[in-house]
Image 1 (cartoon, one colour):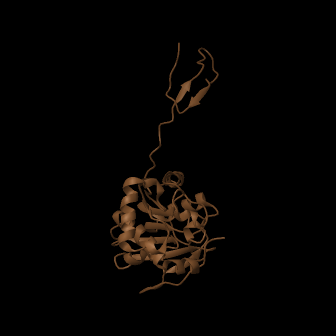
Image 2: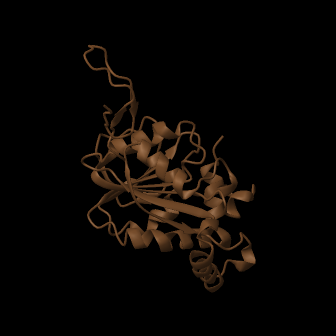
Image 3: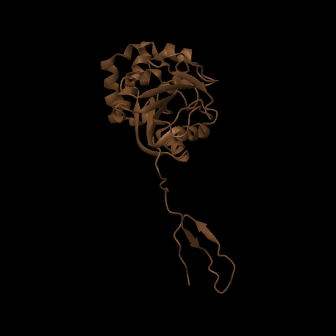
Length: 251
């Protein structure tokens, strides 16, 4: 059962929620300063994160997983939101230049299927950013917060999932190093925690973020080679091989 869109909207209306969004946007804007001329997809609950990009983007579509529900957000073109099955998105192939995932992967019923579907709707050389609860951070330990729902991730786990789906990860970052306490959510205090955490304990981020690209071609992780274990001279039988090692023959 996913966190509902109503609960997420209520959380982001609180001082703690606004601070969480601001600290994540601080890192997201270093990757995406603007979305000028881009078509962008927000999957999960992304409205607070994409709001500041609405003026520069060519088009933004907000898509919520069917189990999450949706809240109608309007633009000059009408309602921006839709509900969709996470493994059957209602968009043509290679529709979006940018894809942002928030409150999506932690509770996905079929995470590989979701990421493959996001790969399908991303243009070649398009970029995706996945933001998820950090498994080592304090925010994932609080059941009363949306980040405490579902499965948290490490940065390396997110990278591995994206690689499996066909993306090529570029950079990773973290946010929310301070404790999830309302009285410590002021801008100056929160920024101080962020600077301290990024420098001293980067592994303790409350949120982890990974950007990846849908490449025009796939770079193999390494060459697949083989080592001949028992060469058979003068025989038509095939030698026994062991994968992922260089070819060698022994006389």
